Each structure stands twice: as structure tokens, then as C-alpha cells.
Amino acid sequence: MATSDIPQTQESAFQLGIRGRCPRCGEGHIFKGYLSLAKECEVCGLDYSFADPADGPAFFSMWIGSIPALAFGIWLELTIGAPLWVHFITTFPLILLGCLAVLRPAKGWMVCSQYKHKAEEARFTSHHEKEST
Image 1: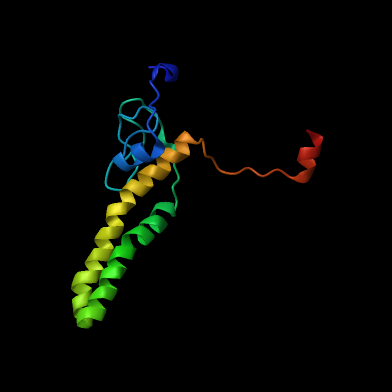
Image 2: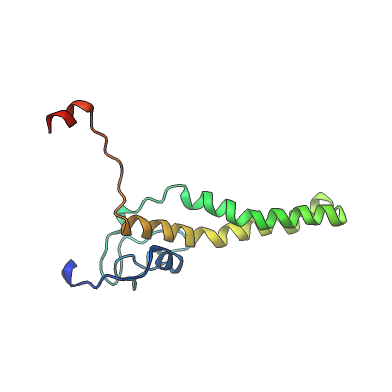
């Protein structure tokens, strides 16, 4: 199937990313595991080698996932003065689950955004190269 024959999805990068769908066709999957990217879309054949979400998803998931757990931990400490072991069995799992719940959708969103916005690595040219063109 030629690339021009593949229907382009009109869904946003956010919608596609949180569902883990291909940014080009909207049908295939971008993940082969929980966080591992597939090599290519099984429907349209889009090569995912362009994708490099780096640490962005981890940063956002730590912030988004840990804020409710932190609020719970502070509430727990201020209301009942819980010992440290209670925080380990309540607050720590909340932080872990909160971050993991956000990590995959955030990574999918970044991968789809890179495709939709044609993001690529920056290329710097020297001042002399600009003058000669």
C-alpha cells in the first residue's frame, strides 16, 4: 500500500496518544508492551524510529501522579500523625500507581505529537553557511 493511499486520521495527537494509537492511521498500536514502542504500525506500516520522547513523559507523570499522593500523605500526617510505616504502605503505593497510570498516555501523546508536528532533531548551521546561501 502506498503512503498516499493510507487515510490520514483527523484525531488530535492527544486523543491518539492517550489511546496508544498510530498517529498516521489511528488504527494501529504504538506500543508493543506497557512502555516499549513498536517498530512500526501493524496497519499502515508507519516506522516509529522517528519517535524519541526522551524524559518528557517521566517528568510529567512524576508531577501529575505524585501531587494527589503527596496531598494524601500530608492529610494523613496532619489528621492522625501516622507513623512512617503507615506512609510506606499507603502513600508510597499511591505515588507509584499514580505515576505509572500517567506514564503510558504521556509517552503516547509525545510520540503522536512528534509525528503530527513533524518534530525532528535541531540542525544548527554556522553563521558563515547562512551568508553563502
